[in-house]
Image (cartoon, rainbow, N blue to C red; front, side, top):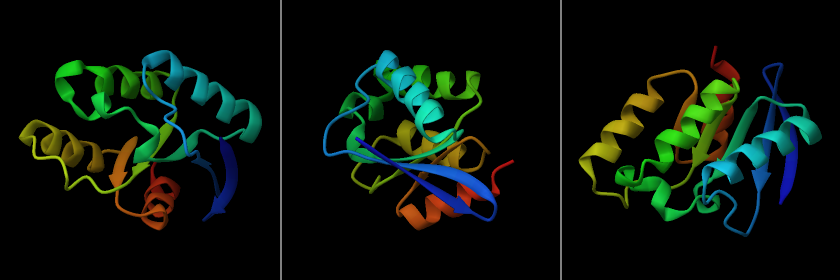
Length: 122
């Protein structure tokens, strides 16, 4: 796993890259948050969709809710980058829509858009 620090509009962002599945459960998400805070001293993280277990995108598992609650509790903002059009679940589409209209979690198609959203989030 690699963490690259980016400064966008005066805001520090951590761009995380990995070829491996990193977030398969809540503990893995907590470990990632701690690593990013320690190594990059950032509270805004950009992650590719491929780092998440597919169960994250199945809302019935409650994994997404539990993980995103941890990000909220620890005051970390998150942008997940990828193609979400492959998911047909109405509840997931609604979840993504609501998240994108907030200030803490974003589901976006490109890393550039993730940087823009996170750098402007309050």
